[in-house]
Length: 293
Image (tube, rainbow, N blue to C red; front, side, top):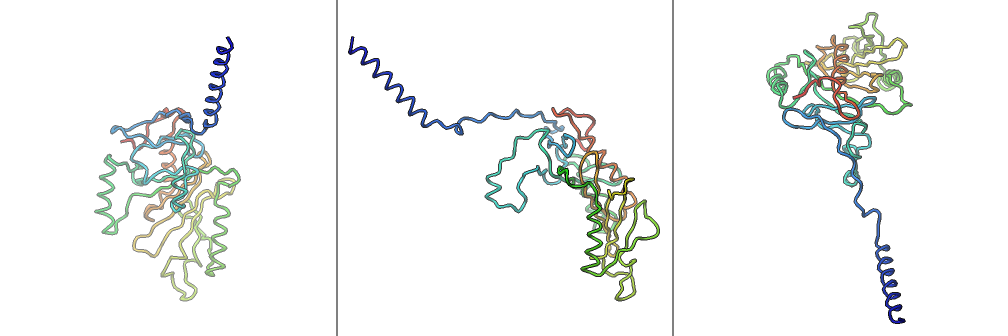
């Protein structure tokens, strides 16, 4: 009886030691991580998945082949970040709530369409590059960059930006920007020293530091659109920025000055394009996507 009892005690002790050793090696971090549910992706006719996320206020599904480059999400390392940081970085799982920092695309000014690979616009863009640019003809494509605005402390206007620009021009280059008496295409225009180089008394020969500057204010007096344009080049270009309060975004557009009269149409059409990419939090499209291949 005693020997049987001892055997039982021995087995219990042995099992306890095995369990204790196993417990010492147990590491929560080594357990398989719970995988995030894979979101639903809208796809084009070739089966390519859209780029998804949340841009400012709204969840979006950007058609495959539209983005020029790639989308950057909030928290992604910058292009020039330390390679070690990039290697260690793990982006959160994709979802329709993952905030997008920025992305770019090409917009055709003449009809409000967008460039998409494996769609007719791809051939159109190549044709325009070959037949218009070499001959100095107006290029109807604009480069668009969209930036989500997530800091509630940052005002969605260019008030401080514009005033600081005028101040720097005066202090660094001794250039006064003077408001012109007549608006142009609905924009308030400012020209460097009224367009005259004070050293020569003649029109500026270079616009490196003297680009024409234009603004548009909202009803509250805040600057919502800012544009600066070249005026001495063979082909003058414009850099155009605007805020949209509904989307909570800032948009940059670059294009030939030939198309400056259509600045407001561009703003409206770009918002229409973004609206067409809106989806529910589950990825259901809310309309017909512009640019879908």
